Image 1 (cartoon, helix red, strand yellow):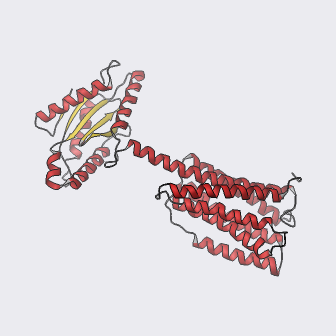
Image 2 (cartoon, one colour; image 1 turned 90 degrees about the horizontal axis):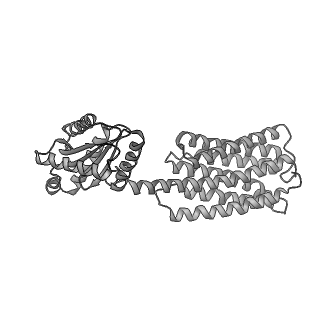
Image 3 (cartoon, one colour; image 1 turned 45 degrees about the horizontal axis):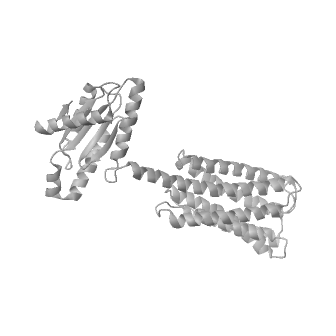
Length: 378
């Protein structure tokens, strides 16, 4: 361990940080603008790169105001920028002014401990304590609001590990075991600088993965959801039906399938306009979803026609579900509408999705012919 040169490790950190800053900057330019925080994530490694360059010239004749005070300030600002990026990404209040005040006060303290009462140990305690506070604030933010996605977990683990390393660093500084200057080739110094380099890399990787995961999730949503009503689109709901029939082949318990069609919807559009018609469709899907079970699925089949999938449901329970839908849309709300429903149930392992859709469609037209605003079964 003692054969490693801290300057070499800092050089590696500089190169990696510069690369990740460029990657994140290009992501900011080309990812959707509503994915917030990427710009701050790009600024963070850029600040750390400049800090590493200043640290690397500490014994090269550069003034201590740059290589000590400014370098450590940039280190803190990089951590704050990463925190703000996470706050913006998860749409949380951006409480960064307090941390800027802390960083400013810490910089004044570092200046005093550099030029007035020089003390490497005291400076180390100050900068380490501030970084622990910033990273801990970021970790708490992710634990509370980050969810369970794998990229978020990666950043949480990195933050926790980095905080643990900083706590050890703080303990060694407080007990006089941290050494006398930054470029000692002691095991403790090498481990500390190495931990920072690894953490910096994983922070940037975590930011890239979080942004990419958000983009993929949104693209999947666009690919499977109807943009107006936010229920499944035709392709997605038919895929759900197909998957449910495959499960039925194994379990022997099949689904019910309902075709729902809003009555006289063209008249609604012609009389009140298409915007009112869109509002009726959104109200319709919201009311239907409110009376469904968690496993049930609704999708827009086309225009004002929808498919409702009820897994492992017999004819009687399917008819009760249809009655609940009718009742939900007869509450007296201004956007309530009448609808006809045709339903069918799985008829055994020989049954297919095409046959079920055809039966439900026939039952739907039967409901229309019998006067609309009713349910019929095939």
